[in-house]
Amino acid sequence: MRFLFPLLLCPLVFSQTPQKDSIVVTGVYEPIPLQEADRDVTAIQIDGIQRILSNTLFDFLRLDSSLDVQSRGVNGIQTDISIRGGNFGQTLVLLDGIRLNDAQTGHFDLDIPIPPDAVGRLEILKGAGSAIYGSDAVGGVINILTATPESTELHLRTAAGSFGTNQESASLATHWRGATEQLSFSRDFSTGFMDDRDYRNLSFASITRLSGTEVTLAYDDKPYGADQFYGPYNSWERTKSWFAAIRQKLGKDTEVSFAFRRHTDLFVLLRDNPQVYTNRHALEGYQAALRRHTELRKNLTISYGGEAFRDQIESNNLGDHQRNYGAAYAAIDMRALNRYSFTLGAREEIYRGGARQFNPTAAVGAWLSSRWRVRASASRAFRLPSYTDLYYHDPANLGSPYLKPETAWGYDGAVEWNGGGRVKAQFGVFATRERNGIDFVRTSEDALWRATNFDRVNFTGADASVTIRAAEKQWIDVRYTAQHGAQDALGGIESKYVFNYPVQSATVGWNAVLPKGFVARTRLGVFDRFARDAYGLWDFYVADRVGRWSPFVQLTNITATTYQEVPGVAMPGRAVVGGVDWKFTR
Image (cartoon, rainbow, N blue to C red):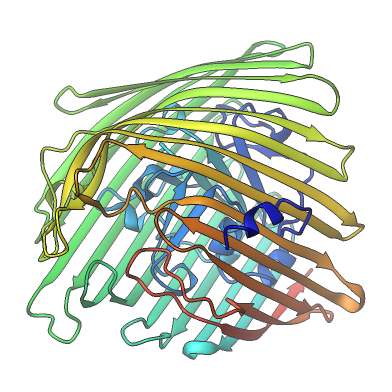
């Protein structure tokens, strides 16, 4: 399998339509064109065709070789994401710029409360982002941006397939005199590909926009079998999320926001014997922000703002705890001669009790010609220990209340080439120098996993991509990432999470609009994880757009590969799902 990686550097295919030059809001202090960003930012537009050719948002995240999607279940029922070697807690997840990360455990950061129909775009920052967003943005940031309806539309979808899969979704969007409303619902159910791996995912959302005001209300409920998720037990778990947010623009330069998130977790260690060990956790989080940018003169802008947070948890295992903290940031962005750009910023967080975290960042970019551009950045980042890291205990795991925050410096640089619109390429290098990294370790297979700080954890790597518009409505792309991790000698101690990273990974695929209304895409991903055998995964999606109706078929893991994205947690073999999508627009 190792010999596949050089072969994947040939111009094969990628299942994401290349985007027109667009405005991005992630990894930058103010909205700017994507091609002018001095950080490594990817934007993925999710339109009607892409929705038909996907099952969940994780299908899109799997398109980037620098993102390691580590699932414990089908269709992202519980999924971690690592960026450039960072652990699952070092990826910050945002919904329209508002934090979703869970203070109980990073395993719930991707408990996204809105249905897929409500999502219009994904933006991904690779590299440290704490100077903009605060804790957890060590490896990178995923910003889920909701769709803005442009017309009145009714959308229905149903599907069924392998492992007792049964899916339904619906959305209603209205647009009237500048005001929009979108109501969406989704249900995803499966009896499981093996015992104790059944699940159900139910979500609702309402998104209202009117005269600079945006209100989001969402709810998600996920019960699922958790066999082997956290140890050799036939466990069961149920999580629920409630989310409410309001954002208000005050003119064109200022925005205020407030959000509330409640997340509950019911965990049963032995599904058929719940009285042996059951945990109940309830987490509530509040956040408020004021953001502003001011153009001092042409090509010179300052951005500044403040935020306030409170997280509190009630748990029969972790105890009752609360965090209160605030943050202030400022940055200056300079542009010159339509060729050069420079950004310098910093953010300080202050915690109750006097603890502080100061995180600076600097980024620079330059157009060498109309086709060549170079960029580089350096940023500091940090992650607070989760409540699970600090206080958790069960028959297999033990937290530590003495853990220190993780801190890191991240560096990256890249050269980009645009061959006139039909071909684009990029080559970059990156490095992370982490201190006080947190992981669970054990001295033998019979010992407890114990939360521990590591003094030094370093990652160094490179990534490359090529995108080709092979025909008028066909796109070709390949992405490849190689990285090397090093940490202090473990002395026979086994690491649970930190060293489950891909030494090499590549994704290729094909996306096309075909004659007679057919649309299709395919994806091949190859992964060579540290100290494990390499494996490949191949998926294929096809749909026929017949007026308002679009029958579709999705085939996943076509080669029936046996693999694990999280050690000890089996993943499903070959699966087929078919259904029909219907849309009415006026």
